[in-house]
Each structure stands twice: as structure tokens, then as C-alpha cells.
View 1: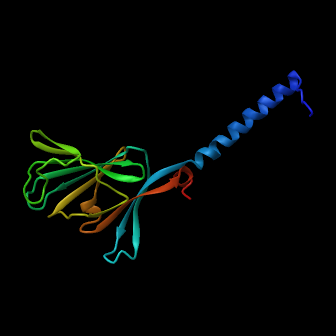
View 2 (view 1 turned 45 degrees about the vertical axis):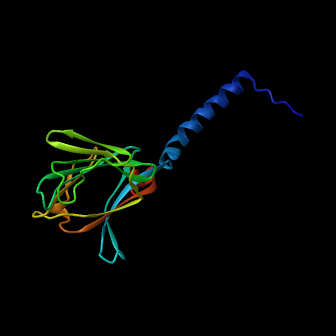
View 3 (view 1 turned 90 degrees about the horizontal axis):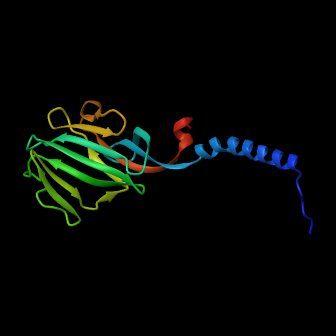
Length: 180
């Protein structure tokens, strides 16, 4: 069995080459790093064709907030979701009234709080890989979508009355850096 001994000069060269290789490979490995992306698509009623509205990287625990004006009660409703383990998790719903289909009881795995003027339903453990959502109009809904830290979007102006689909999809960092 042969033993290789490097001189002090050889060890130095080996370390320099190792550092150069590490520095050269770091951007490549970072670009190929897997991450989740939130994809929002505009769906036709037949669901046969989808047009992409948004495709953006999301971090674990990233917050998505949707605000609407309830069509019957005409009061604001704020739904908060978090991206967790490749799914969209219902985190919190804030309401000012609990009539006309709005929640009035605490979920089995959650709590119901009152912080005037809001009634807050937290938890519940509901999650979805795909979330279907109907965008309101100026008359009914007035949806606003906030995906932090991006600016909020008034969906009711951009996509009035449309049906959109939220997906959490696997992606790579290079998709967003190089737009491939």
C-alpha cells in the first residue's frame, strides 16, 4: 500500500485548489438548490387551460394574506395562509360578523378570539396542495392579495370575477435568477 506524502508546498497548493473549486461550485450548487414556489393560475371553467398569473419563490412559513369584503355582510374578511411543507395552510381568519356563512365556533384544533372589532379564528389544521379561489368584483368581493414582502395586488381590478388556482410547486433557485 503506497502512502503519499505532500510537501509543505504541495499541501498549500492543494488547499488553494480546494478553495478555488469550492468558490467556483458554490453559485452552481446555490442555483440548483431546491425550493418551493407559489404558482397562481387563471383557470377556465373547464380547467383544461390555465394561464399563469404569478410564479414566485416562497420560503418556509411565508405569509399569504387575502382580504375581501363579504358579499352579504359587507364587512371585511382577512384570511391568512402560510406555506409549509409544500402546502398552503389556513392560519387565521379575521371577521367582523359571524352571520351568512362566516365562522362562529372555534375549530377542533384551533381557537376563537375576540379583539374588538375583530373575531379571530386561528388554527384548525386545514391545508391544501391546490387551493381554488373565486375573485370578486367591485360590487362583490374587492379581493386584495398580499404575498409578503411583495406589494399587495387588487385582484378584483386585475381579474374581476375570475377563478384562480393556487399551487405550491417544487422549483429551483436558477428558475428565478435566470428566468429559465
